[in-house]
Image: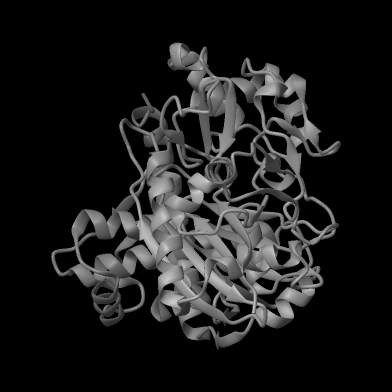
Amino acid sequence: MKYLLGVDFGGGASKATLLNAEGKILATHTVEYPTLHPSNGACEQSAEDWIAALCENTKAVLEKSDISPLDIAAVAVDSATHTSLVCDENFRPLRPAIHWTDSRSRLEAEALRKTCGDEIFKKTFHKPDTIWTLPQLLFLKNNEPQIFARIRYIFFEKDYIRYFLTGRYGTDRIEAEGSMLFDCRTMQWDAALCGLCGITVDMLPPLFDPTDVVGEVTEAAAAATGLAAGTPVICGTTDTALEIFASGAVEKGDMTVKLATAGRICVITDAPKPDRHLVNYSHVVKGLWYPGTATKAAASAFRFYRDTFGGDYTALDEAAAAAPVGADGLIFHPYINGELTPYADPCLAGSFTGIRSTHTKGHFTRAVLEGVALSLLDNKRYLDGLNIPHGTSATLIGGGAKSALWAQITADALGICLNITENSDSSLGSAMLAGVAVGIFTSPKDAVEKCVKRKSTVYPDPKKTEIYAKIFEKYKAIHDALAPIYQNKGELK
């Protein structure tokens, strides 16, 4: 029996999944790591934390499964899109990585929109915002010129981890689509886009397909991870692309709702859908795309709440379940790092409104879960307005899907059925993609048939959907009232 290893790197944790050729998961392991906030708007991560998590995860799944590392047919790594790490001529990091949720490049993004926003949009299908690599690099140029002058190589998160494993520099085209340095029409790096932030194309990685075998595990990496030297390592791709793959969404019209670091609602299409408030990426199935909306902080908002106010997820969930629908008037907006769809406003801030002396911690916790669901409803209403064909149900993906309460709240708020599979996280998608790459699975659809198993369906309660629709009116009114205040007094400095 041959095995496949997928390792995901999310906003706050890495998860490894070991899969066999029949689609059965043999072992998983998760390691958390911090996101650093050294200044207002800053969201950074340490490359050393990534590597430490990789090594712990690989050793743990090997120990749990008791298989020989020689029997692993291929390894794939994935991570959040457009989280960049700048390195010197010796491939050494010059500073912590800038996570895609970092919002310090607000002024740079605004300047790019004014001076060349239309041209950027034509090439990249997106307009400049703080989430993209182009304005983030321009921020470094303007604010850390000594670091910027030493940049020789620019990595994206999963690609640096794969470089540690193989010593090979490269990235995939789906990842490149999220850099704003790549022409999505020609599928090549673009010199003019690079010039906007003062870099050259030769600083960027060579391009591969996600299923290309880029290299093999080196002797040094084998010693650190417990993997066998010579194990093939594929290029891999981004976390959302692989979550969607692992959910079984491989047909036009399939829809996914994501409760992970970010929240997403994506619809599978046969072409990109360029729009100011959508994010467009290619699917791992050639010829398909998964345009979608984005809530900047979903599970990360809940983690922030947990880390700040204490408690574990199980106890928090139980307390939230005891609070009534609507949390007795307490409303949370999850804009802790600004917001994307449908505002594209990095100045927005999170808030609890409607606080009463009768509110308990359970009310606050429920308000967090409901606030994220209402943000997704904001997303869905915008997406529905674009008339992109999709089914009447969706598959719920991301770590938040593990909470039965949060899944029900989300189904009730959106007013749609949410299908839940036994496992749909990115690390499973990575392992499945590795299997496609080395021929264990004959195609992405074959991988889905063997690996994806539906566990349950969450049905919305029509009465609660009506309640949430009324709460949503207040939710929008609060946004509209507070947004100008944040613009005037919440500048990122």
